[in-house]
Length: 477
Ligand code: NAD
Image (cartoon, rainbow, N blue to C red; front, side):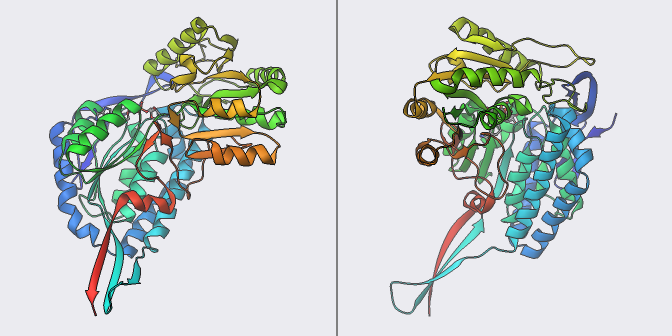
């Protein structure tokens, strides 16, 4: 089997490789992907540092053309790349193609942003002096990504980093190197100069840690778990390095008595179970007021009966497998914890076997949960959700906000008063009204509060905040 190698200083390199396994069919090896060393990582950082002076001064048209070409190729290959994504991560083919389209749109967006770079010219408070405020590239950016959005998250970090003139050392998650390799290959062929974008696949403890230990990374943009995010933060203080952290979630979805039941059920089922519940914006706390509670639980249970869990590439699959054995164990451990804590298992909870050996788990719904239970406080990151019964809107809001996290927050209601109040008072970076807590646009800011995020927002024009540094220049006229 060919080894998909690392790209360091414009050369494909690496003989050590690991298998990329399909979670829908563990007999299938998706490919062999290089596993980089600490020395590879240091070489990649050195290459990005050497490439920075020229790339940071490159013309905006050159950046535009490369980003646009990448976006166009990703769109042209959406079915093929979507199938690769579904095979390595396990989300269904329509979800995977949707994510691939989004990656293409992100490159198109930042291709446009490259042409819109601008500063400000303002008068000084002193006579005969002019002031210019400009944004300059930050330097070498370390990009560390998780496994659950194998193409969209790399795209939303790589595209702005390049757009604003930075060079990159990119380390994708071990479980899903395939899509990352593909977009690096696309950008490399689109004409990026050697060393501007370096790919080092491999272990977090080796490649990732070497990045954290380097004094030469001016910034690290990280998406992943809270534990790893904290390591990124601590190491970065020592190096006076800028960081952007997107971490866990325990997102609430409030359902009020006056909600349209079918809207609420569609939004809740999507939020909790699509993409196998493996989204940082997934909702795992369904906070439901008394008057609609029993009807909501009955309708949710009926809905869950209609969802097929199966091979990600199979037509008619609604929920693919869990990503790997370790995550499956976490999910089933939490199901046991929920039962022991006294929540009632209303649906699912069992492993399922299918034609191919894979990590198949029924969508699992608990009822009679409280917000103090571990299943309500800790991120599970699987197809497991709990219904928490509350008295009224005021209690629902208080419970929704009673969490260490603050990424996304949703409400199903037909009341303008409650929707408006919730938008203003939900302690989250993103608020959804009559929509799933997951599923966001690519051209507007993405990020959270409290334990979910640290640093400035990702995506849209707000991305400039992290990927640039501001300069204020004074000139005597
Ligand atoms: P993880 O923290 O285990 O891994 C994330 C990345 O960090 C991987 O590339 C990993 O190899 C790397 N890493 C591990 N140890 C490292 C170290 N010592 N130094 C440097 N890098 C290291 O997270 P995961 O399991 O891949 O992803 C799941 C988590 O990601 C969930 O908590 C989920 O909520 C979160 N997530 C958050 C968002 C968001 O935008 N808030 C989006 C997607 C996923």
